[in-house]
Amino acid sequence: MKQRIQQLAKAYSQEFIDVRHHIHANPELSFKEFETCTFIQQKLKGWNIPFQVMAGTGVVAVIEGRNPQLRVTALRADMDALPINEENEVPYRSTKPGVMHACGHDVHTTCLLGAAKILQETKEEWTGTIKLIFQPGEEKHPGGASLMINEGVLDKPAPTRIFGMHVHPQLQVGKFSFRGGMVMASADEIYITVRAKGGHAAAPNLTPDSILIAANIVVSLQQIVSRNNNPFNPTVLSITSIQGGTATNIIPSEVKLMGTFRAMNEEWRFHAHELIKNQTSLLAKALGAEAEVDIKVGYPFVFNNPELSSWAKEKAIELIGKDWVEETELRMGAEDFAFYSHQIPGCFFRLGAGNEIINSNVHTPTFNIDEHAIENGIAMMAWLAIAED
Image (spheres, rainbow, N blue to C red):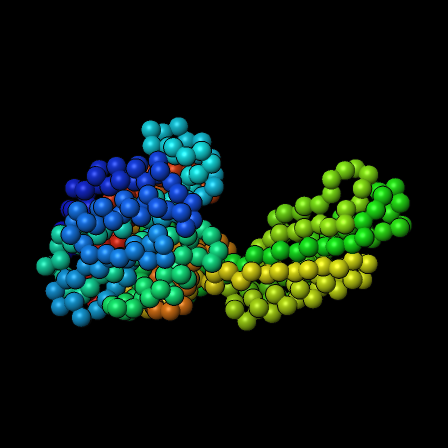
């Protein structure tokens, strides 16, 4: 079966490179993936794969092999793009100004479609049931994964394991990487509003200076991590936006801050939230202002089930050889695949997509892939879905 999957992935590679070009040229932002949703449905209909639409623009399909009750495996791909203007000069560049598949979700969707075609074509040759999850809104709070779970994507049939894949342009094309346990961080959004009386810039003695107070808050918040967190516990707190003021001679009455908090420990994560709120409000009050803190709880950390990840790594070695399988490094980025991984055993792995020329990082206007990654991704998703213990 392994060789059969490899042969089919190779045979269909150009077909799915073309699929990727279509999706890449027609990107859609989170929860607005209407054309992509329709395109996926058309492909599944053409292959006689039953499906349903969930969470607005998500699609869930099921393929049954022999003895479908033996086990149920889920494969997940995200499908939304980012608000970035593409700078690549390629025939399939985005046709929508300011919207681009800069995180590889076009690749993920393409590979899952390719795996779907192969699995449907070979369903008399493997056992179990495969659930295919084409998920919207990975890039935007609250995350399409949470919405699909709430609508029952992990029920009827209920998968006992789930695999997700992400392109990695800093990993050589042809390679994959796996890691058990913690692999990506939780991500929460921080919104702070500092309010003071405001006044004339030439008379700072007559009013609290909201700009200066905001600056003190930014510096002070760094101590949340450096002086409260265990140094062996990965954490990031970044203030990424300061907005306030309209003129050189006016001390504004309001300044807004935005930022992100990342962690890999849930107890510390929520304790840090309280520290951020208390330290910000008390410091603002001590300096003559008031501060409102709103922390929007986002994705939890991604946890790869150690046993499943170890099994998947061994199966990957069987498929492509030991020299092409590496260990995934810890990353402070976030992924809403985390929601699945906290419900059932999950494995989120990396697909090598770069070479000496194509290596721009994700979330950049020049992101692209070495398209040999398409064949590799299709084969790996299909293989992990049906490989026997």
